[in-house]
Amino acid sequence: MQVFDPHHSSILIDEKTIQNRVRELGAEISAQYPDGVTLVGILTGALYFLVDLSRAISSPIEIDFIGISSYVGTSSSGTVTFTKDLSREIDDRHVLVVEDIVDTGRTISALLTLLKDRNPRSLGICTLLDKPERRIVPVPIHHCGFTIPDQFVVGYGLDYNQAYRNLPYIAVLTPP
Ligand code: 5GP
Image (cartoon, rainbow, N blue to C red; front, side, top):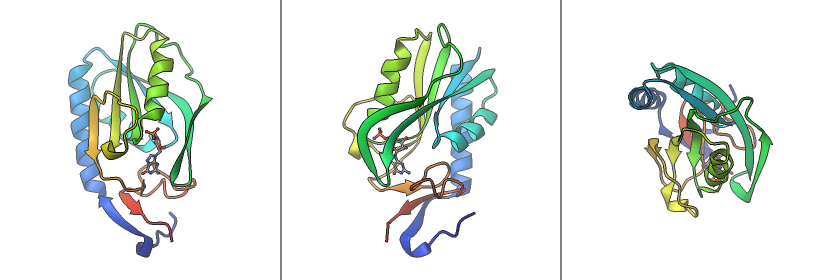
C-alpha cells in the first residue's frame, strides 16, 4: 500500500464504519430483491464497494461492469465517456447500479439514460457516498451509504490520479 501523507489527508470514514454500513445496505437490498438482482458496478471506483456489498446480499445476484470516465485529477471534466459496455443483456432484469460517489450527478444520469433504453424490469441506484451540495443533475438514489460534505475524498476504491484506491478507509485529500 502506498504511504499516505498525513499532512495532506484526514480519515473521514473509518474501515469498521464502512463495513458495518455495507452490511446494512446488503440487508436492505436483499429484502428489496428477494428473487435476485443484477449489480452493475461502475469501473473502477465502485469495485471495492461492489465486492463487499455483493457478499452482504443473501439474494441471488449477477455481477456486470460498465466503464465510464469523467474525472481528471480532482475535477470533473464535465464530459461523460463510456469506456466499456456491459457483457450481458439486462432486459427484464432487476438492475441495481452500484456507484462509489454521486457528485454532480452527470455520470449516473448519463448511465440511467443508456440503461433505460435496454428495458430492465427495474433500475435502481446504490451509492456508497453522496455529495448533495454539488448536485447539478437531480438523480434518484435508492440506497446510500453516507452523505458527505463537499470535499475531495479517496480510498475504498476512490482514487486521485489512480492512487489511493486500496486504502481501507475514506480520507479527505488536500493536494499539496
Ligand atoms: P458526477 O458525475 O456525479 O459528478 O461524478 C461521479 C464520479 O466522479 C464518481 O464516480 C467518481 O469517479 C468521481 N468523483 C466525484 N467526487 C469525487 C471525490 O470526491 N473523489 C474521487 N476520488 N472521485 C470523485
